[in-house]
Length: 337
Ligand code: NDP
Ligand code: MG
Image (cartoon, rainbow, N blue to C red; front, side, top):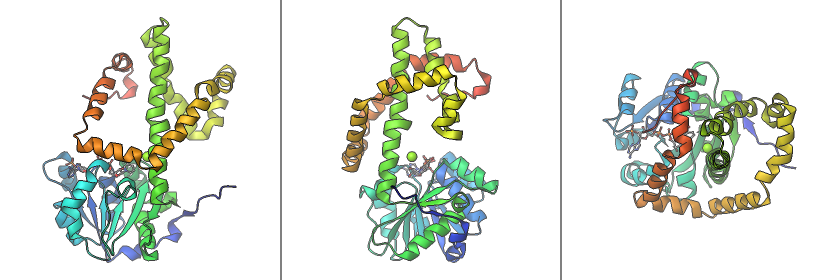
């Protein structure tokens, strides 16, 4: 049997371990703005490293921070949390962070990609620590303000001290994570399961499933508007039921006809061939093949990535959707340009 994960709560974490330490939050985006403010509200000393000239710089200012250039923030800090986009972290680490770290500092992140795939290798005497909220930054902030917290993952690098782990729990407490619960993991597990989930289900799997179903109806002569509602729009209702009560609650809430179709037709869509491909995608993640591909793509200026983005934005399902969403005022329709 698989052992249930160990979960840490408020009483397992000692915030006072951080009281004489300075925490640098590098980047004031989704995670940066939330974690910096929560830590400050928890009574901790926070410096923000954020480049000037962007809305995020102004936001940090308006929240009462005095953003510094990244190297300056690193120099002042005991714990340095890199909350920059994953694909720029390695270069910024080499150019603006590495040379300013001192032994005893802790290098932190909220996603393990760069540490696990060795794009960032902390110098001797610097442990790596991951505290990853399982939710977007705005939720990390809003739940904290309400007195709650978003659950977090915690992991330390091989050979890290027990002290680093305890500081990680204290950090998680500072952002509200121990109010929700903090699950211990490893850099490998966090990174690999995160990539697998987004590729196979959350982004890749779901998008392709929706597109294929939409195309099938349109090719068969049904109106694209009908195909949009059935194959994309209504997905939200189903996902909300999953979120609240898992597969069983979704099946309890839909009609018996829908539930029967689920059991009998679902396995024909996600079949042995699909499961085989999932294992292959997992191996590409585990061996680092996917990471190498994505790193090289970025080094080349991401031409294939940008071309795919352009093409996908112009699909028929996107054109139809843009029109239909305008008819539904409650949706808070968004458009990317
Ligand atoms: P965002 O894209 O929201 O914010 C990125 C920040 O980095 C901004 O402040 C941005 O500043 C700055 N930045 C971007 N490019 C550069 C650059 N070239 N040089 C200097 N600064 C730069 O990032 P997220 O908060 O989404 O992600 C941060 C980390 O958190 C990632 O490791 C991610 O995987 C992880 N994470 C994110 C979650 C989420 O829901 N968003 C959930 C859990 C983990 P500027 O405004 O100037 O561009
Ligand atoms: Mg994820």
